[in-house]
Amino acid sequence: MERLDAVLPLTLADAERARILFASLDRFLEALGTCLVVVPDAQLDELRRAVPRGRYVLVPETALVPELPRHQALGRLKARARVGAPAHGWHVQQLVKLAAADVVGSDFFLTLDADVVCVRPTTIDDLVAGGRGVAQITPPHHPEWNDAAEAILGLPRSERQHGVTPAVLSREGVRALQAHLERRAGEPWRRHLLRRLPWTEYSLYGTFLEGVGRWDELHVDGGEEALYGNGVWIGSQWAEWEPASFFGSPYEPPFAVVQSATRIPAAEVWERVARYLGATRAGGTAAAAAGS
Image (cartoon, rainbow, N blue to C red; front, side):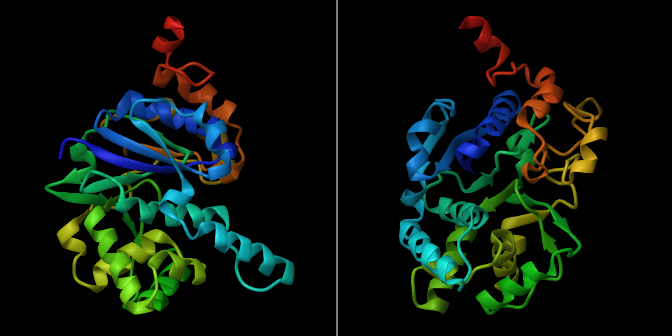
């Protein structure tokens, strides 16, 4: 496999942050094939101006999750009645990442969020080793995620934690998970998951593959920093976050996350990383800026 497709759920609120991601992918991830940028239908036109052309392809959410409008309408009714769990943006992003398996063109695909940054030259071998997707695995630290996966899948809970975004998923593995959910629930898998909130996509995926004995067939365990590290997960980490200590190093994980929930402004992130990406504050590459 020479190229790896990717999926990025994106909203207008994260458009400026995503420009950092795009610049980093263009700088360091030559192996990227098509990146599906999945956006709310109502924001499609506005986001078209914020997403680069070429290998980045805009996709409306309903193309992957056609059940979403009806579920969101029901969620608003339930919210007014104060019953049930609505589908928040986080849940929609998770569903989109699983639904992407139906449209990507590569056997494995990369999941992304707007707050991810590619920090070093990354080849296909960094992400898919010996025909198996590289996985980041840690000791369990969110047992509730594994509890939900066990209940929904009817399979034994995993005794470890499967990493979060960015992750490498098997197209075949996700499709097998979809089929399992439909057999078990007797309804379309997307509808079932929307009715069974909350859950997390990677715990569902990892628990399923482990439970049916296919994890080692499709994935290789890369350890606790196989894909991402050097991140900012809470605001107090920002003051000491120094890109010079890891950007470009072949000995560091290929990605870092500057968690959007910390509310660190995208402009401040740009200030620290632009010099390593050959990028301007506006979000374009230095070469593109020179030619404009």
